[in-house]
Image (cartoon, rainbow, N blue to C red; front, side, top):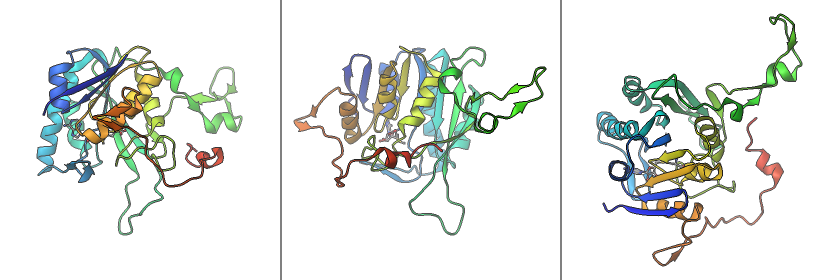
Length: 287
Ligand SMILES: C[S@@+](CC[C@H](N)C(=O)[O-])C[C@H]1O[C@@H](n2cnc3c(N)ncnc32)[C@H](O)[C@@H]1O
């Protein structure tokens, strides 16, 4: 497949296969942070692509190919976050633990108001591996991602273990179970894609593991959430996507082009008329 490149300032979009783009266009040891959210091998329909390999083995072999490339492109102090399905992640975990340092196995938990499983425990989380090349030299901006420490500080508990007893701190670095609501139709950030990741999730990852002007790469960009958030936070962003339909979302969302091959690029035209209010939005907020 021919590779197309689009650019606006510090943001680059590639329409093409991630393996080919990374091999041909991304210099080795040039990337500070990679967020890899590939197809999960669970049969989702990504425009003209069905996310199903002939076997788990074939899927994991494909993952190993792009993981090798990601490792090659990461700087020596770089970080990579990798997502997959609950079934797929063990293969990736076993492969990566021999090549990188897995610092955290994160659970992204969300609620589901949609169809619920009745005959087994339905899945309400997606796993994320947080890995670095050098466990003594990597970026982790803990101060930028602090959350409220509900237990101690809210109840004004005193920590008597300290030599001089003092109030528990009011903020803390999040643990490895993260609650962020999934992107829903009524949310302003919604795009037409089956597995769009929320900006809130990407914001925590990008703030924690990169600095201003760093280069952030997303090889499976989908709706280009990673690039949009990276750009808003003053990072350089590179996004790759195989499907034309989703590349067009990226071109519009990242303000690279307003039209593509004669077609005006528009945000999803939602059928509901009413504007979302702040009290409705708060229903989606982290509790
Ligand atoms: C799980 S989705 C990513 C969603 C994205 N994180 C977001 O927030 O919208 C995976 C994406 O990878 C794309 N894809 C599949 N195979 C690819 C390949 N070989 N190269 C580049 N992109 C690919 C799919 O079209 C799909 O949009």
